[in-house]
Length: 108
Length: 108
Length: 108
Length: 108
Image (tube, rainbow over all chains, first blue to last red):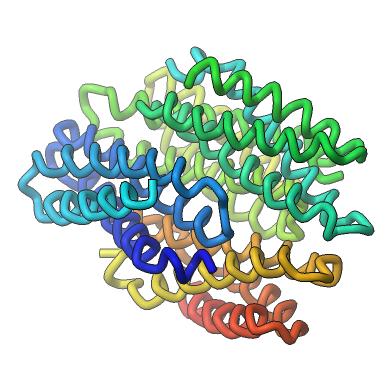
């Protein structure tokens, strides 16, 4: 079944969703929020699409490839934005985003 | 702003989400649910992606084209499945799905 | 059917989702983003729950009252935060949030 | 941070979302789909709210208690429906739903 076939991807999507939302939360608590605005936007985009793809895969969507292709792009963009910031929450977010982009590309 | 530029698309996505969820609900109440199973699946897929795209557009996503492309495909598949069934909820759903697929293709 | 019984509420939820997401987007473009951080957070909360409730109502959820009760609270909190800011996007958002909180309370 | 404080709940919500969506998928493949219709409906409800609550907790929502209260109710109802069916996917789903209902009640 879908949730077994894609177990590793599902775990990665979950980790990426968690870390992006944590980074979003932490960015909004930073002193210089303005500098973090692009990161806040992409963190939400990325958490939303990772959560969406996990839902879709587990209920047996036939659109895994199409959705994973969009998700890979958003993860990569979010990872590249996070990389620019030295905060630990951004650096950790960048790592999982890149890992998730790779995992999505494999099924896209 | 995004919600003004895409106002017509947003209305169509909302109508399509409403009608797909209504069709899902009505299909699950039919006597022959087994025959409606593919329709139930696609109704959920289509309602979910239409709702997702509406959220994304209104918060200013830079991924309108990518998401609308996936949405167009799902709308079209859902419309083609609904067309096969003579029930009024399926026929109305097929119409709005095809209209929504067209609207998505214009921005994809 | 659910989507006819709740048609006015569904329209209000849609308008509130659109306006909250627009306010979120506009707040992230302001010069003083830090001052808008609580508004950004609540705009996302409110857009998310309004979109969620609209999906749930239209697929025939038996949990309208419970979900609408949470939605009413979030709409009211978002409206009260938006009221504090003089920007037009915040003032318009406050108005629709209060209207949506009222509409949710009627079914909660 | 929220994603550390609630780590165990987040894992349970993820497992419950996965199992409910798998049960939804498997129920739609059963020979007697009509008998599974209430299970299909509740599986979607439960997967949706578990996914929603996980998103909300990880982006730092102040509404954990309110949302977890609704989630607990839906998990319990879904678990009770699944218990009635002898299929393995329903029995496994019932177990995780009851576990998730308990976990939600602790923070509600």
